[in-house]
Length: 53
Image (cartoon, rainbow, N blue to C red; front, side, top):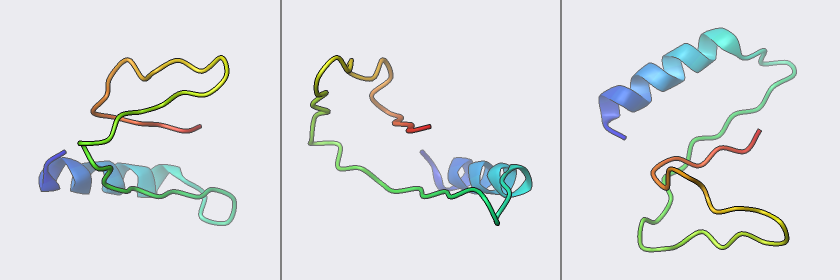
């Protein structure tokens, strides 16, 4: 994600979220690490993005 894309994302989300009820965190994940799903979980289809919702 470029700095411009990150800025656009955060600007859009700041208009959508309700700060008294919602939480948001954007972190940069180490691209050298792989995702290890547990239980019945599936690996993400797009490894460039990870969403928990």
